[in-house]
Amino acid sequence: MKVEVDKKLVEHVSKLARIKISEEEKEEFTSQFDSILNFFSKIDEVNTENVEPAFQPIDLKNVLRKDEVKKFDWDPLANTKHKENKHFKGPRIV
Amino acid sequence: MKKLSVKEFLNEVKNGNLDLEDFLAKVKESCEKIQKEFSPFITLVENFRLSSNKGKIFGLPISIKDNICTKGIQTTAGSKILEGYIPPFNATCIENVLEEGGIIIGKTAMDEFGFGTFCTNCYYCLPKNPLDKERSCGGSSGGSSCITLSANFPHVSIAESTGGSISCPACFTSTIGLTPTYGLVSRFGLIDYANSLDKIGCIGKEVFDVALLLSIIASYDKKDSTSLNIKKVDYTQFLNKDVKGMKVGIPKEYFENVNERIVEKVWDGIKLLEKLGISYEEISLPLTPYASPSYYIIAMAEASTNLAKFCGMRYGLHLPLKGNFNEYFSEVRGKGFGKEAKRRIMLGTFARMAGYREAYYLKALKIRRLIINEFKRAFKKFDAIIAPTMPILPPKFKDIEKLEPVENYMMDILTVPPNLAGMPHISIPCGKINGLSVGLHIIGDHLQEGKILKIAYTLENVK
Image 1 (cartoon, each protein chain N blue to C red):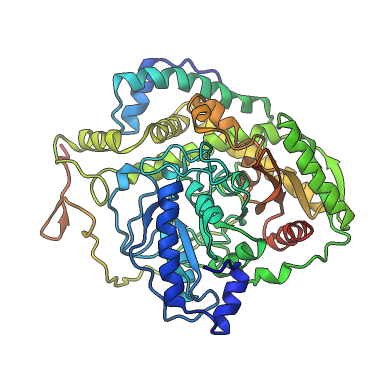
Image 2 (spheres, each protein chain N blue to C red):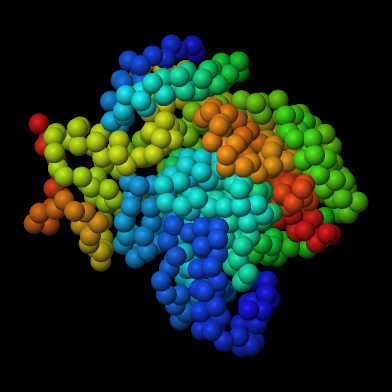
């Protein structure tokens, strides 16, 4: 697939990926993404009609477990700085 | 300190000939010296404590790639975004090692989240190749290969490969790198890069070392839904030279665009194996050139979802809570991720976007299916496939700096195909060129670790 990479596309993807990038990075990524997508487009040469995608390299079965409560002995809040009354404290939602 | 192999060391311990407290003190001293000279560690453990578990590797120093969670020891996956993270639990492979009496000595340097071929996308420290300090140790498990070669004490490292991160560093440092079948070692506690590709494995000085470590860390684990439910195997039982009648395939595509002197060395190795009774046949695996772009698309797509959890809330880098959640997360991720991480997350996001998902992500997964089938057909006829591990000698840091990202990705052309297909593979030293090491790659069918270990052991012991 041929894709025209421009600064607008890079900005759009950075927004979707929730990564703030600098003006410099925007410029740099625009030209780099262009050559990387060009490298990706090599896959167009392969005929994949009627081929099932391989989400895993080896055939796996779905594994289910009982929905049971298990106790754990560690503090989930031990690695956060943003907490209040046994809760994680997050940024504004709206 | 008397130089001992892992095997000799374990015998000495068994016979009670070693003062282990004294031994560990010397190992600590040695690690500090090595750290100053080659910097293989992101974190060096403060106190090496002897375990009360007198298991199969009682007292043996083990280093761990820093993307594997170790209870109470900082684990960063080489990223600023996880600086200061202290896991409250152990990865399953760490539990296995501790149960057998292994001693964790430190967490090894790596490209951020495994995103790199040369272990130069490093936020913390850059490991230097003990064979030539101006050159790369290989990536992304560069710290593991660095300490394995420089250690003057018995030691094995737990490393991890997504697209070649065990084989490449082993190749560049003249050590042995074993990447097992996908799912053989539990990924529980591994900070994932690409969950359908990540495999925990080993780097060691001798084939025995990696076979022993694999026997310990390979185990079925209910905590990892992709863990293979098979019986425990003692892989050291395959270490004999009983190779008569084995057949290997030599794929011509793996010798194109490879340094000519590396090609010669690898052929020397193949001829040597022929003398010992392993016949070979030249074959073609025509889909080989498509493995690399397919791999990068899949790996980046998976990385872009796996790394969504790093947002400055529960662990790692925190900033003052300002703005709405989109602004806050974007700010933290913009500051916490290095350039290569940003590139891969963004490209992976792109490959999954509406309108592009079919053409990139799903197409790549279909090619993966075809590549697996191509390998499977070859393994109907052959016990293993042999090729060079890397197409180049370990490059100098100043030359790596000049590479564009896409040129960097092309360096993985030989290691990516078995990784994409989840096939076990081992890199073993195969001579030197101007003091720099060459690696021979042995690739096996799913769960045929025994066969590739046997061939590697045979090659190791003929020299």
